[in-house]
Image (cartoon, rainbow, N blue to C red; front, side, top):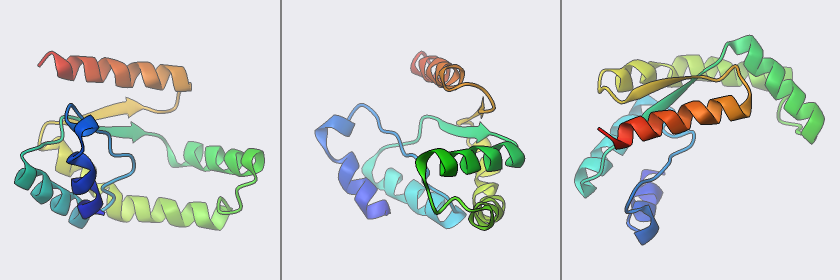
Length: 128
């Protein structure tokens, strides 16, 4: 995955910035990403932490399953995803917090409100 990201970041349209969605998910991936970014002279300006209670996430995924016909959003699969998140991904919050680029986003709101908070955070990062 890191090799694919490296290749993509070498393209002209990624020169001014990039967004990684759902990556990294583990400490090993984060460390590999950091190493690759150092090698190519890039960095992560901001890392968003979407803060959402597990139960709200469960409800949203179950609603998505019903509305979109997603067969992979079963209660068992959702519980497994949450377990993996807490075990493997949640430690990255502190990892990025110590680097000073973590921004918490209150994700238990409307899409428009969440988007506005993300946009505001990006604008604040741009003036630094």
